[in-house]
Length: 296
Image (tube, rainbow, N blue to C red; front, top):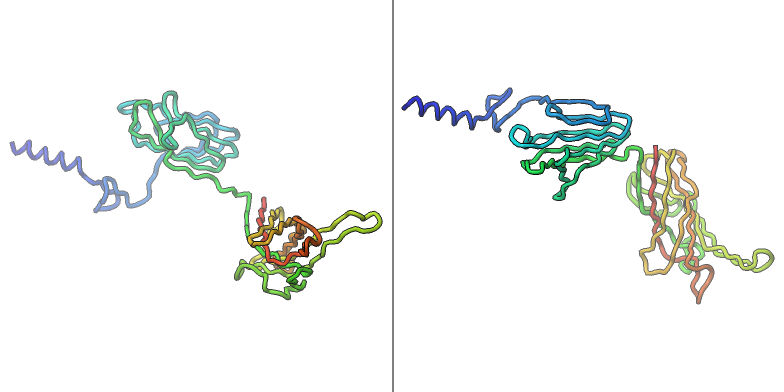
């Protein structure tokens, strides 16, 4: 009787044991104090059936590929908890699909397949559903657009020098009132040059109108941008009570004496000239939204 009790206790201890590798005090069912090795395979074929001894698969082929997950069954083919990791380092896409009769779950709606784009990573785990068989997409990392750099800022458009509340034009950063930002992320307005609207009254110019406009040179105080293949996107904004509407046009972007300078032409377009005592030479301070995008 004692023998049987002893065997029972030993068996119970084994079923609840914690196993440690390179540690005498495991704190989990399996505790590994060191590195862990799992299967790794690099695939170049465009049709690849994922098999039992796969774990981390890298695709480096030259065309769009299709990876098919194993058929989920019962017993030894239930695969509950099995994890596959797939990284796409090619210049093509991978369609990861479940076997016929099985599905993938991205959310609570099963799908037949999932596209892993260029540079992306996906991880799938088999759940406990053996009826119909489901793999859960447990983790994805989408690629960073590594060939594009983007920078954004909101600058100011000062009042016109010919307005009812004029601000005189300047050069060589003679007015600091309309600079924006701080420290190395500051933008200075180096120069401001205003042009008043004009009307053609004689000769071939009769009937033609030029809008009130301004040329502004902004200078970034941080490290100069790499302006090669850089494309500015400009919009003018109005967060004031004035009705003014502007358009902003790109003139130039260049590095001068170790600083990046952006030259912009701003024009008022909602009306030109004078209207009931109002002048199109604006008196308010408005916004210039700048997005610099560089492709490399």
